[in-house]
Length: 367
Image (tube, rainbow, N blue to C red; front, side, top):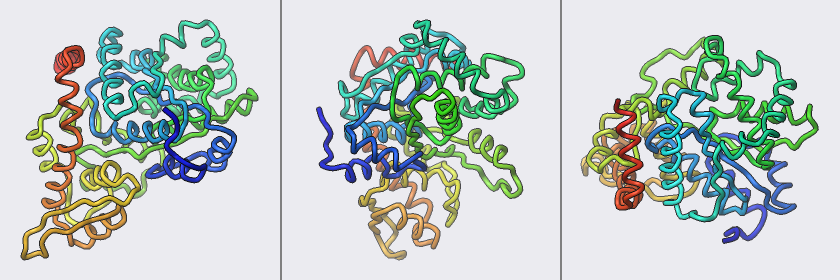
């Protein structure tokens, strides 16, 4: 199935809508003008798919629809290095099947290539490339990149394998031979490291596309962020993003309707506060996604009755002004998530293989 876009500019709009950053737009335009190119997204198989992951998953679909030949890399070895699922490689591979099933449910089954880390690391050329990458990067630079694992920059001191992880991610890009790397903003350091190393090794610089992160449902609270260094702020945001390892912080694709609603209603969502508000962020990046779409928010008649919101900007403006009450916003977002996730959940649970995979992962995480 080919690209649904009719020209270069429409493809660029599709790929860049609701992204935090593209490095660089000029390179992306040149890629489309000369063809379509290939891309990849790597994910750590580490648990049940949650709402925060739909931000990059839907962007992955946008890239497929734009005609980019996408690879979905199940970073099994990376998850093992990062101590996910107790380091049980069989469980990690099982979790990878679950993520691929969710991606397929977005309507792109058969339109991308699923690659396992084993497909790369079992080739001796992979490790030769990794050594060349290591010789082109300083220890300090690699240590700073540890935040891509959701780790502090000093955690490589007690487990040296953590320092190999950023080198593996750069090597993945070279070995896949892709033009585009997609990931959340937490992956920026790895992508920038690849671009720097590529220049030294006279290899292709990857075009980096970064999607926003959805904060924990518990939010940042009333933390004082003033005076924090860029690195300290980054590590704080990593600690408070929506995460599978903190079930209370996330909404999972397997959550029943009533659980989704309950989690949203309990979420951090102070009146008029937009920054760090997970309910606002879910609405911005899952409902609107940089497009004009209608979200109807039901309000009591004494406060003006129902209101239709059409964009991220309008939502932020109205909420910050107090025109939208937190409870009314929460109910609207909960309704949307239930409608969006229900068919995906039902598809997964109606398939015996997918259901068994979910049960295996759930049992492991709960231990």
